[in-house]
View (cartoon, one colour):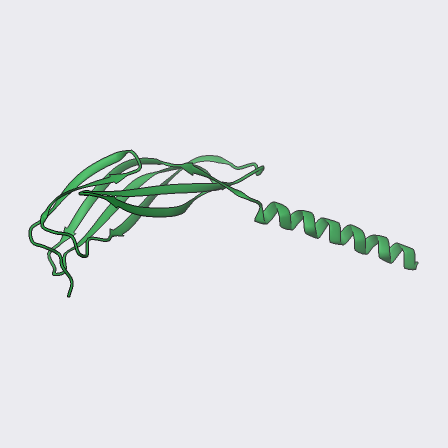
Length: 133
């Protein structure tokens, strides 16, 4: 009887570890399909600007992973990535999504700025210097 309990425990532990590995898994990054972007500038001081990115995820296992903002000159770049669990069977569905992303415009001078979200671009203008004191 004792040998049976030990074998059962080893099998249980193996199943538990295997299922944890499947659940946690590793993620791979993929760019998702951004269909449209809208740039919204608010009448406030300091000025605030949001980007609304709309698109579609390709299956039920894909999720938005990260949004990385960088700036080069008068171009603000947003890189939106997705992640999908490896080795998992997922239902292919077109899942619409909308992300509202506040962009960092603090400290920017008055002028016209380009916003790139993955492969789409748009523009906005700051009427006055947006210097926060």
